[in-house]
Length: 124
Image (cartoon, rainbow, N blue to C red; front, side, top):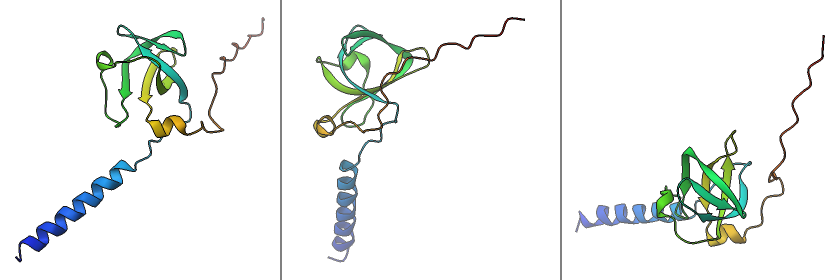
């Protein structure tokens, strides 16, 4: 009986730690945009009805916050948050959970803005 008590305490401690992991709220970068994605033939995806390309090191996280391979994605019109690299390719994608879909986007979410025009250089 004396060994059973520490084992039970350890099991309860591990169970409580696993419950807190499920309450984890994913911190999306401020520059992450919302959209709907339909997977295509790698490296192509369609986001918000526009054909886009995944960057060479693109990462996709599923609803359990685990890395998902692009070829394993199934479905269409998947709710996502995504970021773009400096070339305009998609470099990070998060597949949203039901709770994340229902949550309104933050007020400070950055909309797609055009790049500023290059500065004109003075002629000598």
